[in-house]
Amino acid sequence: MINFPLREGDKIAASIIVFLIGLVGLTIVKNIIMKIIALDIMNVGLVMLFVTASSPRGALPPIISEAAQPDRYADPVPQAVIITAIVIGFSILTLSTVLASMLAERKRKIDVDNMERMMQE
Amino acid sequence: MSFHDWLLLFLAASILTLFERVRKILLIGIPLTVGILAIFQQNYSIKVLGSFGVSLSFDGNSKIFLIGAFIGFSIVALHILKERVSFAFSFLFLTSFLTLGFLFISNDLFNIYVLMEVLSVEAGLLILENVDEKKLWASLKYLMIGNVGASLYLIGTLLYYTKNGTFEIIPNPHISKIIFSLMWSGILVRTGVFGFGMWLPQFHSNASDKLSALLSGVFVSGGIYVLARLQSLFPIQNWKTVAPFLALAASIFTLASKNPKRALAWSTMSHVTLMTGALTAAPLYSLSHTIAKTILFLHSGSMKKKTYNMGEFMLLLMATLSLIGMPFTIGNFSEKFLMKDLIQPLKWVAAFSVWISGGAILKYLKKPCIKKGLTHSIFLIPAFFYPNFSWLGLVGFLVAFIFSLLPVRKDTYTRLEKLEENTLLVGLGLVVITWLF
Image (tube, rainbow over all chains, first blue to last red; front, side):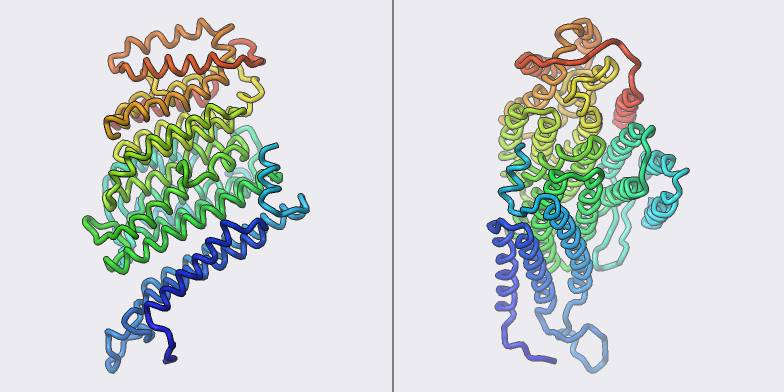
């Protein structure tokens, strides 16, 4: 097992910071492609949070053996469900990229202000 | 309707829709099958994966929401019966119906997250029919903002799991304020509540008429279902105080809108916001809202161009009056429940928001009503003698009528023509409501 130098609370704090960086980026950045990248960063923070929170007692793979101590296993359930969330996040990311590229092809400008002006016309 | 039944319907819809000959039969057949099964289904609760809490539950709320989805999708399916239906549209139409149906029987937090996200991807793809720049941007905005809401909800779900060891919605779970805030605000963003999900008016008003009808009529009820399901978990007394004021704000935007589709979208936002403040009565109100909004959005094109005939005019009038809460309509019946569930001093705020958002739509039907259609009011007279008459409906009608008098517009309203098949579905909605309650 690799000994990660960070403590449990630090790992959770790091995940939340990554999530918030993505969220702030999504809110303040004007370029649509940058927004999509921020969305991805936010999703990465979310996955990190799930993985970290699933191993409060230890990071051993949850495979039952007689020798291993049960209280050192990582909880497999959050890790199992986050796979579904990763797939969903990826599908939304892909769809957003397709939509953004279609917009870029048609409008040649991909900043938010331009788009909002177009919606008012 | 167990998990296997849904799986079977998903497979049937996915495979059979490849064949053009059966496509239209499927568009009507699958919602009809689910609707009939939902009416006769007994309550049940199933744990799919044992102790992890993935569970399904069919109860009274599920039944009302499923019937609402069946009515909404059937109205749209009947409306597009004469058009050529592409494989992509029919596939997405059916899968989104089944996704929504599956959401209505879900009883665990993670399942709800997955289904809401799948539904948003389906909606994002559906809007791309006859795509233009406005649709592209509206869809992109919807996906991005929606994903933020879903992420907040998912963090709340994780915290719920760490506290309770299950994803299932259980009675009296350990809930902290942070869990409540994350999950509640996440769903409010996803549902399109005023102040949280401001993507809604652009997304709903830029889609094609049939898709707007689905989005505004049926898809929004998904969020309401989730909130109604979760209300037992959270202390929402404060939110009940805020919601009527937010609904009133959204209804003022309805009044300021310059085209009927945008006004209808704002009106949806106002109604959805109001429903979040009275979640016990929300399922029934959501059903009446589904029927009215589906019809109004389907005919929003002719509302804009003023090309509606007499049949359409009567249909639109009925739907709008139902939104306002006119007696003898489904809207009046459900509105009374809604008003009882609200915090009583705020009943007037809520009532004004309903009247303004409905009256603002009535103004697009103004001309036939005033010039040629004065005689149409004869149709409304029996409503005043209806035994279930309430003062609320009368005041609502008067306020709405005053709003309808405001600006004057041209129209191409011509002569009495046959009523459309959708009128029958309004009647069907009335029958279902009467039978159920």
